[in-house]
Image: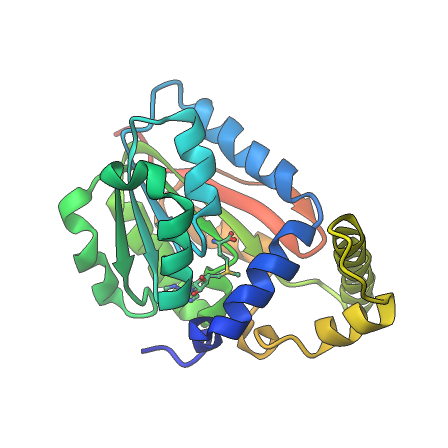
Length: 245
Ligand SMILES: C[S@@+](CC[C@H](N)C(=O)[O-])C[C@H]1O[C@@H](n2cnc3c(N)ncnc32)[C@H](O)[C@@H]1O
């Protein structure tokens, strides 16, 4: 069991994230749109996909909206999050499997191997809780679970290069969270949101790595078409394809 990230097993953080943060992520819709464009660019329907650290299943839901025949496995080690995913995706339950699994140890692959290989593996804001050595191992495990031509997309929290850039990003995120609360007519001052952001429960669990470094790892593993396809400060959409042969 990895220690980092276990805060996600608490109901309070799950609800704070789902109700107060996810919808306030800057350019969240654009990030999902980029993911879907990359998936569509393969030119063939998705038959099998894996959502790693699925949370409430937001990425799976987007894939299923375009590929309703797809069969998916949603992996998360947080019981309250998996419960939210099951509720959210109850209409697609027959084509989905939900696995309460910690991807922090290599054995996690045993829980999905019966459904491999995958056309697409996606992950959203989850792998950054792993130490860098484990991130790279995990990317290699993901590579081996993909079909030839299969695609890995990581929508991830990555490191700023300087403290100044980090502070600009933090202020951008706080403004976006403030706007999100205004839209939902939840009365909170910007100061209050800023205070909550500074003391967020999951902050200590972050082990951020620069996106350039993570793309290098993907290339070393053997992924092709590796790139950071979209980035706004610390939120990046990056990944690559397993070669066809
Ligand atoms: C910030 S949430 C993001 C959820 C969702 N992917 C999204 O984009 O909204 C991170 C999720 O990763 C899960 N997670 C973090 N570390 C994990 C691990 N080692 N194994 C399985 N799930 C993990 C958490 O439980 C949580 O549901």
